[in-house]
Image 1 (cartoon, rainbow, N blue to C red):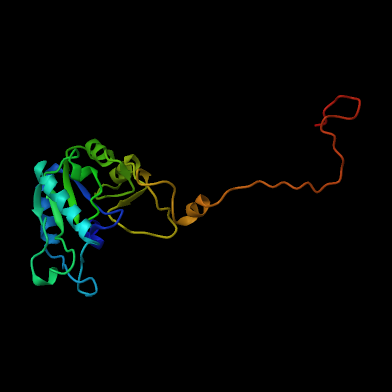
Image 2 (cartoon, one colour):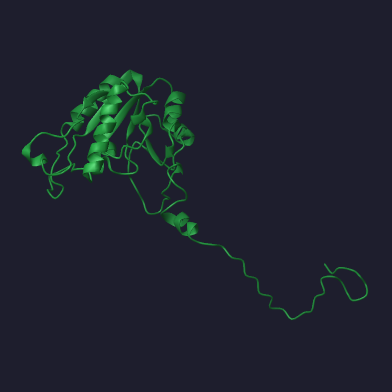
Length: 227
């Protein structure tokens, strides 16, 4: 839930797609909906608030349009999908945290960046299929892998095309590690020494300090090159 709804989903590494094994799919959706139902929506200046509004009216309308369009493609709203009810939500562009189930990788909502409090839950059957779904989008900034099998986690991390991969965590940052993605997620890296190198042009300067005269083409008249 944190990965998908922190900052109302308005982060570039939001967990916008949850790719879940089919054997636990229904239970996952139910558990996630139960968890999301406890998120406290409200005034972002209130210390008790856990999720505030989205940034603007156009963003609010665009996010709702994504949700409505997903339903025409066969997605099911498992939770949320609308503006929360109550007088406290009349001022501000509030949206409920939204879970879209029965999503497949070809749906628009699974291929474009929504940048809002919406997560698509996509089922998979095999590890290779999960990797294929993860990579089958134009973006490649960040992802998280959740499993008890650490060897599998490292194997999948190696095959996923993303600049940042968390294992059993999400959104954990450190100034010593590079930040950046692949494909349409941008070029280069920020943070760490990689960031400095991105803004550094290397130059080679050579100064000769000895006074010995060297004729590289050879002694005069001999035609021999000096080595």
